[in-house]
Image: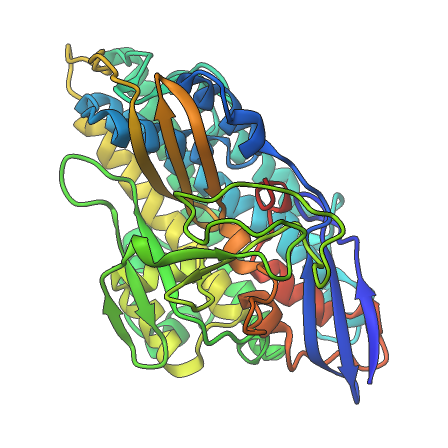
Length: 480
């Protein structure tokens, strides 16, 4: 048995280190470390309540809208405010655009360039993959980055700027969208759909989203152009469905709430039994036994953030969130499984959670978001308010639960005299990259890395990179 350290990782948002125990060329155990402490929860304490709308988005420049939406939802819960319908539609469009852009960035900038590495030079697909996906020099980047920039023009129309906009408020959004701007929104969304259909999928989005089984996916992708089919071919050749397997329950807080049911349902999906059950938010706890944190209340609504860099047994600034005492995997795979997507559920029944299914879920979700954005833009009512300016009591406690691209994001807030008495944040990467808990149970990534073959490559193993990137870590969001 030997121990190696992998890190710092490139093409990862923030700092990340992974320590691996290797036995006969295979990972026997893993410890995932978030080496950067942020302290946003401490920064927010004592400030006026609406400062959360200024500071929380600055936790991250990639999922800034997600942080805004969680802070907005928490304040809305405290004050009992109901947002203007137009404001809900506009916020959903902006949030979906950010998450869709995140999915594209993950696939084209973070994930696919690993297959252009020299270690795959003997594979028949390597030359084509390197020409298209190589970091910086690949042809795909020259097509994807302008498409991503065009998509994010939505932020200018709805929120004035991106990231770190102040347009998202408990009562809705501050900027009204006129008829001409709605036409521009629909044009941008239409361009995004065309990009997905021509380059990503090579097919109409409705046809892609109509795939309802692994067998249907196999038939559909035969002879298909598009980068999704290219990924599927590479994934099959490298058996990515056997890499990064996880057995943890899959959780979603529900996403894109509006006047009716949310676009993606909330709940918990158990891959072992293929069953879904309701989500008990009160069952969420945080364990700090292996974090550089002092002991505090287990429930986030009562907890404090008290750093302790010398804590015995600590190896990460990341706490260990648990639901009913269990580690939980979050992300697009969880969202689509909980929501009942037939293809994703069939893939989980056949292969479980793995590198391949996580990437498939993100790309399919991007297609669903493109159609949803178009629908929301058409539902914006003319000459109706975007912001409800109801009085805010600023007293009490609330929870804001949303879905960022990487998974479930929660903000717990307590106000007194309209000032922040307590603030706790559990980000998606906190769930997926958590350290062990007091019972010695590893977090989702730590579990998924077990069994990964590294051979003689050791710390340079590309297989480890694939597993880590399938969860798409955003370490700057993780430790507050």
